[in-house]
Image 1 (tube, one colour):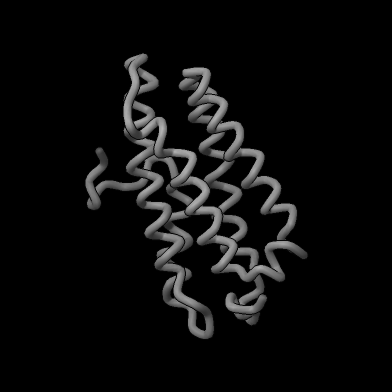
Image 2: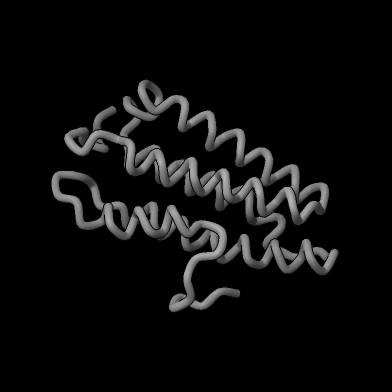
Length: 140
């Protein structure tokens, strides 16, 4: 289990951009996205250990829910209108990489897990920084 003082292994871009996005004015703070990223990070680390050890763990079952929670927090942060409009490409990329992670866990494929997580991290982080700063995240 990672310690809070350690750097993020699976979601470093997301954690970094949400740390800087938290300071933005005029937007709902990104702390919820960061919090969901940290929760997903913790579960992903447990999955990684289980995948390497070829064993079962509660994290393997918990990961899909944590990834959904992070994607949902991201959609709230960027705003539903943007997420379903101009941000639809990001939304699709998040969904695709989330499925790849789930498949890798199911298949016990550590290499695919790591590669898919890199894509997931990039997709979430890019969505967070790509939303126009003037857009209110509470906009339906």
